[in-house]
Amino acid sequence: MATGPLPPPIPSSLISSSSSNSHSTSSSRSKLPPLLSPSPLPRHNYQQQAQSKKRRELLLKGGLGLLPLALVESILKEPLTVPSAEAKEAVVGSYLPPSPSDPSFVLFKASAKDTPALRAGNVQPYQFIIPATWKQMRVANILSGNYCQPKCAEPWVEVKFEDEKQGKLQVVASPLIRLTNKPNATIEDIGNPEKVIASLGPFVTGNTYDPDELLETTVEKRGDLTYYKYALETPFALTGSHNLAKATAKGNTVVLFVVSASDKQWQASQKTLKAMLDSFQV
Image 1 (cartoon, rainbow, N blue to C red):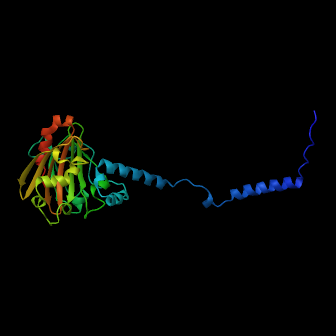
Image 2: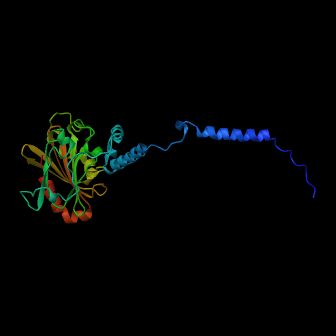
Image 3: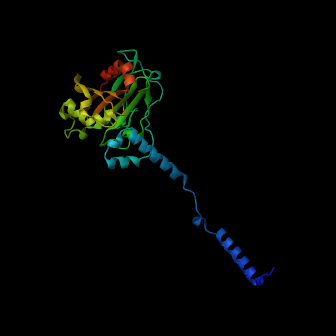
């Protein structure tokens, strides 16, 4: 079988030069400064991304998507921490005293150790009775108002309690200036019960408020304060399909007490929830 002529041999000088160049290139690569070498994303960046994601989830769950965009953006930049309140995710009967008026309940009296607003003097102390089996839940920093005390422009959550079988409780505080320009206004100065719930309704339901959901309003006098009481049927609310609320104004703040329940919880606990609502006072 015929074959073509073989290629001429490569000169040894070229082989040596090529080998030297290859070694030189490899050597120079290995000597690149560390700053030019690829490096993994710093660990703290991963932590910041995780915190940002968690904050956004809490905003949605807490109904704060209703807040102005500028405020939401400022909240998202805050560190994700919980306030130093004495919130305990344990049954309240293990550490709260029995209610003097009804030993089947315990008495919660809010003090400066419980919330940022109370420590700042922005909210007056309040109290209510609660079944011994309920648990006090921690309030995230972004929902507690800790980031803006003592001059918050939007409502915040003071305390939260839950019981899987009976329902949920929360106390929400709103700066008075959000509802009226009159300093130290009473709840009557702000308006009638329907006007007040129109402003605070989304903080009862966790999303939106429809006037057709309002079943009943009551005006109650207790000491120097007037309280507006509400019964709402809220089939689309995030908090629950049944909501009871009570509001009053004192100092620079309107304080809103809310108990909520699903249909199943309401059937078993509506009498208990009404007793809790009636007991609330500032």
